[in-house]
Length: 338
Image (cartoon, rainbow, N blue to C red; front, side, top):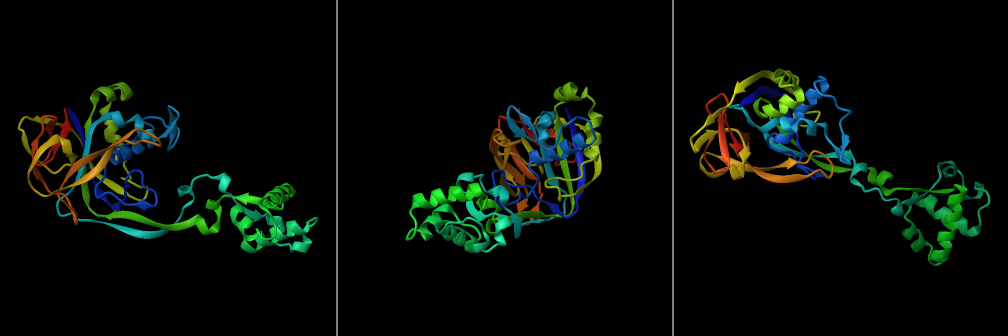
């Protein structure tokens, strides 16, 4: 069983978002397995080892990440931070464009005056009836208004039916147009809580390789994955810059003991007992490679402390569903599903 051991350094830290979050964008305390797969997948495609049509493509009528093409190269993925490396996850308020947080809703569009008529007075707009002038005056004064609010403002002067008929006439003349609420200045930007994990220091990532799948897709050329690992430039968001210091292709040695010491995170169900040491639980996921793509939350045991973020070994009793592999250093024990 072969394993890829990647040692690198974060320049400032990283951020990797919780799944299914939008305006609440907390960051994980350590890279999830899918983030590590995405990091090496990006290098694989950038080097042309495999071809991709872009950052997303359509598979079975779903938009997915190209990382789905390489996910089966890896039987298990984990990571830890080197000793004496400590970090913190914090959340900053940022002003962001929020268009993508609003649903597309043409039926709830606001009314506005067409740009060519904005600079003209009511009297300068030709062929307006008195009723049309009432409506145009309200819309010009407000800048934009929802049809229901327009009806409420003019209910003493015009019926709902009259207002709707007049609006249709004004739209045909090109005097009044519609604009979705999400494009209005008031809603275009908003306060977003953005999480970042500040941790400048060295990390180790372990990829347990599926040599059978690699033989099919890469003709068994494991050195191509070594090359890709050397070309990892970020782990997480595009700003989460990393430098790779060393890459090794190692023989993962199976451990027969049911008790092991490890510093690498692993799925919680693979242990029957945490015998000693500090740890916390992070919920990562399986799948989730694109919109509406299958994903399953999975609780992971992360050895060490979360505040401050620091990796430390723990002693674990394996469940009957687990296997353990020694990678290189004493506590580099990867716990995987049988």
